[in-house]
Image (cartoon, rainbow, N blue to C red; front, top):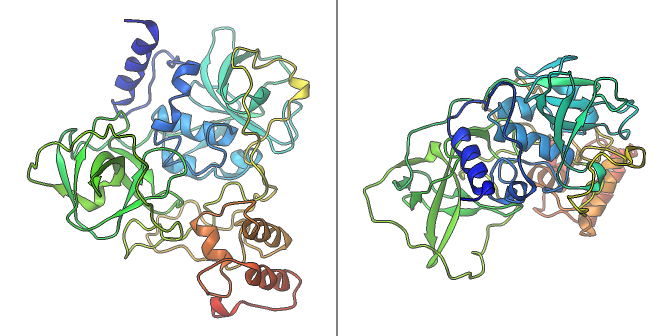
Length: 413
């Protein structure tokens, strides 16, 4: 057996224990080949709402820490630009000057190494001489990098963010078990990045499949208020087998109907649901105005360079940044445990608690198909209540930002 499959197996087994992967402050460092498997991991796709999936420092740090077994709820408190993470760290997250293995290395916007939007990386190990081995995305224009930083290096992080352990994984179901949905219009979140969910009717039968992330406790995609245990399963819909994630809250054990057939057809994916409709069930519509972590401009870079190049070479030429937005104000209470629906602030597209020219720009970009909105943004941008976002909404948001109108009719104020 060659080296790479053995390493992958070890990581999968460790992750399946449902606790942080600790081994003398040393973690199994991913190879580039393992990193390229990220589209199969829900920590990097379905349950990671940062943009530019596959090349973004905030996206990677959020996903890697969750992959290592750390608290998704605490990670969700840090959902804006990298330079805001230390200020927003909450829900058990602590900021310290002392590096720890499996902590988040943080650079603020004033750091000599990094851009004005800051940078975050994951501390993979702390060496005996005090140096740290870190992994990250987007530095050196590469999707995945690992490198060592000495304590006296000008690149030394501003501080470190330590997270609590994740909730223990659920063991309610086991791979190979058939389960039945207990609610109608239940979202079956398809495996992979940026795919809209398929809605399942009440009573639909799924087969739980083997996956190292089965039973993880994570927020509903696009929300920081709704959390579920999630299971990887197969569903046969329209004579095609699809794989994805479904919330344990709406599942029960079903009588065995035999395993679902494997899908080797390579056929096109199912017709997906309207992206404007994204509740876990019809009765659980949640729109999170703070769910967009990138409410400003294009992501850092979708291009990748040769992964064999030195990731730390020519740092002076590199501008490190997180999700690219100048908006970091967060008026919501990240520590709230309320199950009530979060309030939509109409016209506030970037989630900074105000309706301003940035919101006008973002809405125009969406209308011109330059930028794609998530569910929370679509709800906030539809200020005339006609169930679509177009130039009419842009005009109204602009009028509000300029003080020409005091409220939107749809908001009822």
